[in-house]
Amino acid sequence: MPNIPPDQNVNDVKKNDLKMFLSPSGAIIALLCFFLPWIQLSCAGKTFHISGASLGGIFWLLPILAGVMVGVFIFYYRQRQAEKSKIIIIACSIAALIIFVFNCIRLAHAPRPLLGLVKPSMVGFKIHVGGIGLVLGFILAMVGTKFLKRRETDFENAASKDLAT
Image (cartoon, rainbow, N blue to C red; front, side, top):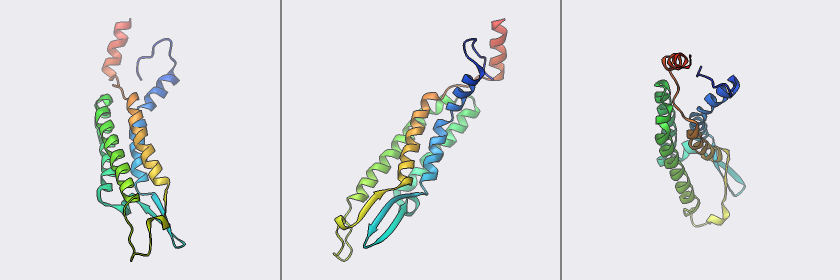
């Protein structure tokens, strides 16, 4: 446990330590939401749910980026230098959000010719829980970087106690 200043209690320190896990938690949420329904399409009385996995293509970069974020966090966390993962987590989150938003806009406005009978205005297009969760997960990962900090080692704790006495 880190050296606790006299004006802080143990519960505050534990809460601050838990905040470090917001970034990997956001990445895991985004990873899970990749496989949930993103889009609901309705046409001629039929409804279809489409996930990121069923869309495929460039969307497969999103779970890869989320996995990289979790892996980088674990790597640096084990070295007690979690703050070094900030720039990679922010870059991966921004890249993922750009890929998601740009390609969803492209899909929404793409022509949908079906023998010339179905016009884009006849197709209902609605964002679903997976798409919303994916975006919120990557945003949470970025916001969580604010709480990434260097953990003190047991040796540093012992040294700071010696200096205090």
